[in-house]
Image (spheres, rainbow, N blue to C red):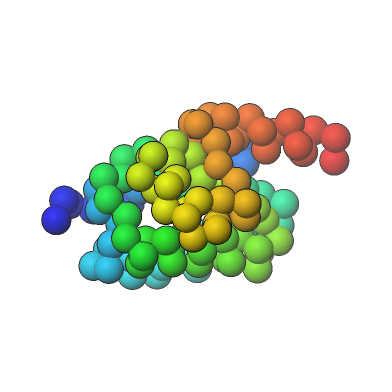
Length: 120
């Protein structure tokens, strides 16, 4: 198994989780436990950057659903950035593609959030 790492940082839109390595049964609890500690305000965007993922199993997909649920509970949105092809395929196969908003890069996700709040 590849090493797994999660890094958090802030952005204009809200908190960002950068995941790298294998998001699997062994590493999923680390991300799930981190979600409630994030400072996520109503109207913000929780961004999960998947650009560094090398593997994602069903436990990893469950973590993405947990992140979405956490964002919704905070009256915020969830965006996924840099979704690897193998993860995008899984999301499509299990029917999550329509409910998980994806962007090519973290910058694209943040810029989209800024454009969406400009009129608010």
